[in-house]
Image (cartoon, rainbow, N blue to C red; front, side):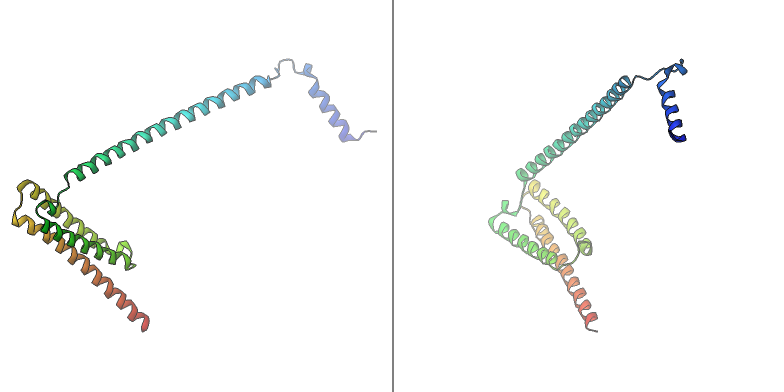
Length: 184
């Protein structure tokens, strides 16, 4: 004996198997539908690969252009780099001394443990001095060994050293004040 549930289930199964009850309804061709879906997916993949390839090509072109520009710029600066050594050996040695002093002072600032944000003002002042230095170097190349130009170049180095020393003094004061606060 079948339960009521089993009878209803059997009736439904018979209705699904009987295609004659709905003559106007077509049975979908599953295989054709899946082929269409696969074809659409293939188009999407090809489109995505095409877009990724185009993006990679553009990125490659941009990076190549930047590299070429940097190489040309670097060659230009090394070929035309001019310093006080071009004037005389003694002036070149003096410039080397100042460069070393500036490097050592900057190293002290970096080793002080102060954040870069804390000495942004110093970096701005050094950039301005560098711009003035570059102007003097161009003048030296164009006008030759002029005493005013040579003094200006040396003055740029002296100003750099003063700016860095001022920053070092401020760092020392700040650290001293922090130590006093911790003691109190």
